[in-house]
Image (cartoon, rainbow, N blue to C red; front, side, top):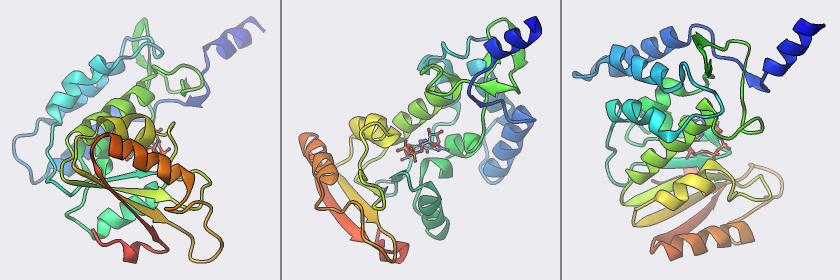
Length: 241
Ligand code: C8R
């Protein structure tokens, strides 16, 4: 019973570290950088590991990821960034077809971490393969802090027209609490924001460009002196970027 209580006390509500986490990072790094010359994947994997190893998984800071960010810096041409919220698969399908357009997962940093889970312990160099904290357990966990700082860095680097693919089948297509609404939008320094609001082929849309959540987004964009545009679309084929 004592052991069970100890076990319960130690467990977080998210999935544990992905098996072979470091090997997976290394594999992804090599495959991404095959044709790019001066990238040191060993260094990159080390920097990733050092961000959370031997640390309390509820006390991770953006600074912990600084060395990794430095090693994976990339600049994306103006007008070629695609942000998304609640449309991950669609956004990636689109950038697969359009090799000149980039989501964060098409950049090295996002490519490395996409779909993975990771965390450690304060007093050991082991990784926790049993469970990792989610935002509900504690906000400053390795995965949440990573996506926040990666998204912030990605959005900061965007210039010209920034495209964002939002989900029109949700009642609030623009969600202030999403990474897009909470982090990316506020750090953008681009000149314009183009919203593509994707609806179902059939069925009534839940939210449209004339709805209140998009109006709210427009007011935030205007406050940042960004030109604003929104287009309701029923298929990715209508996305003319
Ligand atoms: N971005 C955020 N989160 C990301 C991500 C990414 O690129 N890639 C992955 N796998 N994740 P959501 P959002 C994971 O609610 O919150 C960037 C994280 O675990 O549908 O608005 C990207 O540039 C994260 O908690 O979208 C994009 O523009 C969820 O997926 C926004 O931020 C977030 O899924 C999307 O973030």
